[in-house]
Length: 226
Image 1 (cartoon, helix red, strand yellow):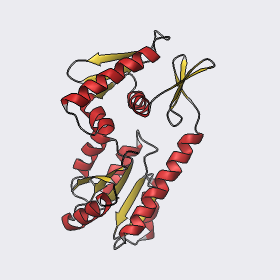
Image 2 (tube, one colour):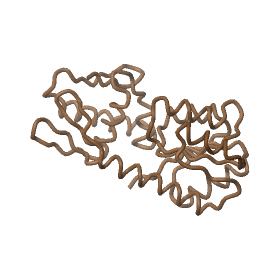
Image 3 (tube, helix red, strand yellow):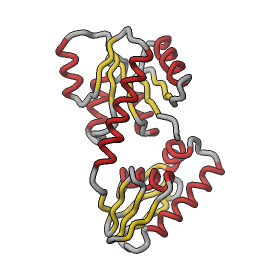
């Protein structure tokens, strides 16, 4: 089972490091950013499973960052860390699409329980969701199945992850490095070769609909045209 990828944005260096080390010791993968702009760049690059955002940050505060993320991503859970206790701040955060608030100071066990609870809810919702229409095909990311008519074709976990990333950027370029880091864990030469093999496999599984193409955009990545 792959590690849960947490994007942590916290401008208090000492606190951020403590949270990062605590989560990593419990087998999470953590990307720590000390300001909102770096957190936004990391979000676009890595597409984390969950975001833990400090409200008050330089360059881009947590509320602004959540607003930008929610314009294109309504699902990834967002937990705010805040020392603020005013009711209006809590209301504002939930209004912007936050899933939860954790007030400082807090215990790591509390944060971990909340992270896992929100991810469990997301997985349940995804498992119950409808099939995604892809040309003549239907795709179910959670069941890892591609269906054409009544015929179902099973996908491997990696094939399903790859197709889902391409679908998230349908008719636009999905960056090679982003795919490699998110699915394979690094962008080294051997993983890049493996990714190319999986792209070829997906092309074969989608070949019965000529309107669907996975294009190689040289020097950048891939584009799913559908």
